[in-house]
Length: 279
Image 1 (cartoon, one colour):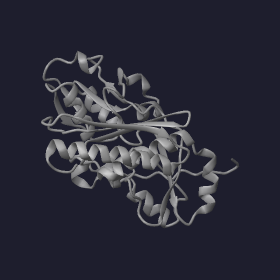
Image 2: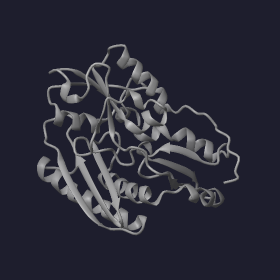
Image 3: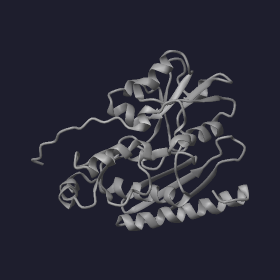
């Protein structure tokens, strides 16, 4: 593209606060705030995020300019002792940092002991290797991007564990007044991924999705037909999982967003019926 790029390394509060769950210390925004400060100050022209960590509503003055082609969106099973979740003995200890994964794991194996797992990827793998867990669940995309795909013992198909909205995709954030940067980034935009994640993020936005909500949303595009599924779960395992889905032709992000909103409304109605209150 003829542009020289310099990397500005940063560590966010989401990387630094490891003794509490994200839902208790500020949620997804902890992974992007420092990067937005750098954008605002002109220290950086763009910020690259794991899209599943980006809040559904960006602060005024910032735009999601581009979503790149998605890597593997699935969750990965990592263990040095057990080939899959099904192979675990009763009461085995599994680590995860996600309420979504907690809810879906409990639906798969109610007998498991699920414990919090925070830290960067190396820290999480070290805790596993030190014997603190029988296995851990991570995003397959993160492992593959860092050349650690060989640590994956098995992947969870979406039918087993529906991914989080935006999982596996990279989003590029810019200041709203940087039309020059936005224009350059259009060469990296992957339209099928953009449409899919637009629908997924719409589900999460309508549901009030955050780290404190056990919500999954995953869309796929075949031709011009987008199919989207969403699941709400109870991390305590008391309520059964609630599912919703829809499909329809989409040509742009606005249509994909409307389809996601329809699924969210279905899900809200079902959750309200089951729990006696809104999601």
